[in-house]
Amino acid sequence: MTGGLGLGDAYCATIERIKAQGGDKPRLGMEALMWISHAERPLSADELCHALAIELGSTKFNGDNVPSMSTLVGCCQGLVTVDEEASTVRLIHFTLQEYLSTSADIFSTPHSTMAEMCLTYLNSEQVKAHQSLGTLNMPFLKYCSLYWGVHAKRELSHYGRSLALQLLQECDGHISIKYLLEQLGYSYRMKEGERLPFSGLDWASFLGVVEVVAALIEMGCYDTDARGFMGYTPLAWAAENGHEEVVKILLERGQANPNKQDDSNGTPLAHAAGNGHEGVVKVLLGQAEVNSDEPDIWGGTPISYAAMHGHEGVVKILIGREDVNPHCPDEGGTTPFA
Image (cartoon, rainbow, N blue to C red; front, top):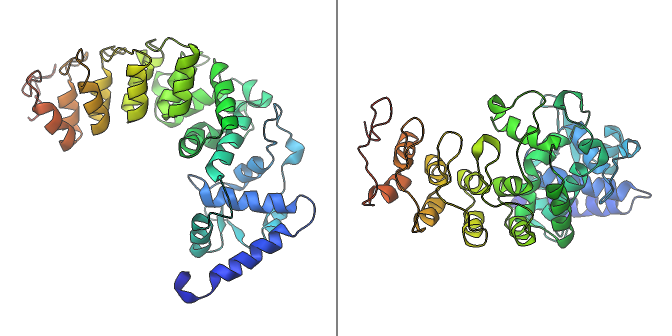
């Protein structure tokens, strides 16, 4: 690899030295490499150190387990460094990222493990006990809130599924929901001290974790058509975020209503169309009872939102239907192609 420079052999030898260290150093070194090479974004030093302090499955987060950054760098035998300018931890060279990503024998199921660790962190008593984002000293919370579902969608073990179901069945008032919605721009609809109506099925549908959505439906834990935060149903969250398989499950197994409107009278089809999710649009249009041209409180329709945001593929799908009026004006008198 790497232009014949022999770096693959050098990296392999260094990893063997990491594994040959005494005490807890091999675990710290290898887990650090796993997180840095497979995380969805660069991690800060505090985030990484908290990630490595997680005891899988424990209900309590033990702060005494958090290693120092100097200890961590030493455990990695020179393969990681702290980028002081970006305040993140990174690998020493891009070729190491390539090596760790393509060598399947180094980390057998990294995303499954990372999902389990994120879910253990979110299930901890320390996280569940807090209600205010401003007072919580849990630096890994932001990453876990935003990305546990991404890792779970890639690989999910039976144990990870159990941890997810535990979290989602006890998520009423969970601070991670506030973090998720705030980070994704929904904070303008959140009131101070409000207990958000965001169910476990909403959460799983929002993130698109198919196995977990299916399990929650089979367990009968939630009303699959309930309107929650902003009046969104689980189907609306799945449609807005383009999770086609979740949309199918909610329609088929959960018997979700494809025409259920949110607080602004928007439909799942409008959310999917406005975000350019062609696959979801096709699935929703396959429902005999779907209203393809339902306007919201501003007079916007699925085709108008698709046209507004430049989603040509969705526009082509909708404009070919007899029940869609491409010339219908919104409340300001603007038509989809004006």
